[in-house]
Structures are given as C-alpha cells and as structure tokens.
Image 1 (cartoon, rainbow, N blue to C red):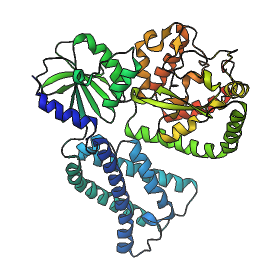
Image 2 (image 1 turned 30 degrees about the vertical axis):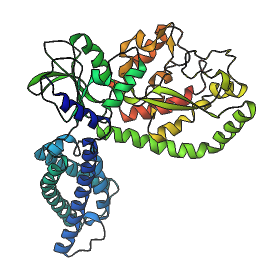
Image 3 (image 1 turned 135 degrees about the vertical axis):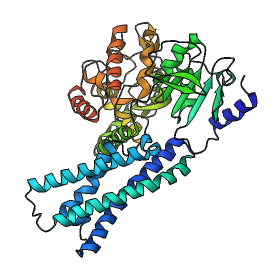
Length: 462
C-alpha cells in the first residue's frame, strides 16, 4: 500500500515547490557542451598557429575555416550530438561529435574546391587545426561527463506517477499524486477536466499511470496528447496501441506515447516561428492599427476578442482575434458556429473574417509561445460537429494536441475550414491533423506556410 504521508509531500512538490526541472538542466548542459565544443575547435586553431608559427588570423588556419564551426554545430544538432543519449553515454557522444566534425571538414573542402580556392600552403595548417581541434574536443567531452553527472544528480528525466486506483504497492518517485485526492479523472468528455490533468503533467518528461483496466484507454489518449513519454503500469496483459515496453519499480509498463518532437526539432520549429513572426508583425503594424480603429468606430467593446482554447498538452490558453461580432452577442464558448448570414457579425467583422485578417492577433500568441505558425487549429470548447462535441465524434481528438496549435495547418490548406455541420467535417480535419502530427518535418511547415497564401481568402471563411 502507498504511504499517505509520502503522497502528501510529493503532491505538494508537484503543485508548486518543484526544483529546477530536469528538462531545464538538460538544456543548460546542452548549451554548455556546445560552447565547450566551439572553444575546443578554436583552441585547436590557436595551438596550430603557435606550433607552425603562422598567424591565427582566421579559425582553423585558412579563410574557409570560418565555415567549420557553424557547419559543425548544424551537423552536431542534426545527428543528436546534444541529446539525452549523449549525456548518459559518453562514447556515443564522442562518436556523434567526431562524425559532425568530419562532415563539417568535408563540406568545407567541397566549398573550397567549387570556388577554386588557393589551398596551396594552407592545407597543412587546415588539417592540423582540424585534428588538434578534434583531439581537444574529445578531451573536453570526456571531462564534461563528470560535470554533467553532478548537475543532473543521477537522473536525466523528471518522472510523475499518477495513482488512479487502490492497491498500489510499488515505489513512490519524488513526484507522485493521488488522482482521487486531487479530484482528477480521465474524463474525455470534459475539456476542463482534461485541462486540469494536463496542468499536473506540464513540465515532466515521463508520466506513469496506475489505474484500473477500464480507465487505461482514456488515460492512454490523454497521454498521447500530453507531449510526454506516457506509460501505463500493467497488472495484466492489455493492448493499448503501445509503442514500446519499459519497467517501473520492477513492474512492466507499456509506453503508449512519446512527445512527437525531440528537443532539436522543437528548437527548429520555434526558430522558424520567431524568424517569420517578428518581421511580419513589424510590417503589419499599420494594418493592425487601421483594423483596430475601424472596429472601435463601428461598435463599442474591446478590439481584441479572447477565448479559451485547448493548446499543446491539452492545456488551456486564451487565443486572440480581432473582434468581429457585436460585444453583447459574442459567444465566449463558441457554442454557435458562425454562418454565412450571421446577424452577430459586424460589417467590419464580415470583411476581416472573409480575408482572415481577424486571425492576425494570433501572431502575438505565437510570439508568447502559446501557438505556432503551423499546427492543428485550436477549436472553441463549445464547437459541435453536427449535434456532437468534437471529442464525442472521435476520442482521438485529444491526441492532436501533442503539438502547439497553429494559425494555419495541413487541414486548412486542404480546404477543411469553416463550420462543422456534420461529423465528416471534423473527421476530415482530424485526419489531416494526425497526419501532420505523425510526420512532422521542418520543410513541411515551410511548404504549408507557402500554400496558406493561396487559401487566405476562402469560400468557407465567414
């Protein structure tokens, strides 16, 4: 049986007294390791210049040596030289780092060949710098493992155990909560409850659930949308579309979910959001100002309409749009979908909805980190497909929230937008969202953004 005092202390830690998360520790270690790698490469250049008595005017001895450090970083990020596996396996980290360095060197030589650079007299300096930089890199990484172990204190991930059933007699990790005591349950028909559960899971790397068989399916769907590695403790064999096996306290677990993007891919996606959004916001400031004035002149009330939507990990956030309806008729929960002749919509509102200008304030949601430029569109809590809530049509609906919601997405460029008059309208969107979720690539986000330009004005936008 579980120790109630231990549960109470762990529950308090989950609710507000957590130390620095392991994810934050890992990010800091990755940054330190990247900086250490670059220092090692530049020290290799300086050492070569001293030994060969040549000026260290450029990194790695020749002009094209400037390419090696940034190319190394790109290739190291791409092959996982800064990853959780590297922090736990020093040999694997060295292998990936050396592969990235060799790749950077070969690309640099290829560039020098195509531009017909004069390599005579500098080849020795170049190769000596690369070799010495590589040796220093290896030594630095070998020593870094002792620093890393001290920082993560033997654990690289934060585990959360949720006990949703009587009779658990296994070990209690540092963060443990009793679902009954916290009054949480995997109710897939209650978005507010799903949002509460998501708040408990926020920031953890791994969430393990102990629950009865009849609730395993519901918990597995919530875990799939929670952007964590989710596992169910097994008392008996059971099929939950598992993607792997693991163990916890000597008991078998099924891995039913993993976050769809690793740290490197999340960084790429966030960088794309910022690189695109910041200049767009600056360029659109005059238009945003004109629209705000037009809305204010036509009807009383705030310019920006905020509405609760389900975001990444099934957590709630306030989406921002230009107000397009009369304030006294604004639908906070989205229980009534807008129609073509909707009498709630103002004249300005009709224009900005038809041209998708009403969505522009969501660029601020992107900057704040609640949304991404590309992802599944967030829906109002009261939205219906026919006469059914979205999650009643298909419980896989909760899985689509494993990524940040987007201003545009695969469903939008395929024409699946506007009101959902029947179940098929939602099923089409959900199918596209899950396809996007399961096959994410950076180039696909870019292609979706380019394709969005063609569907900004759409027959179903009203």
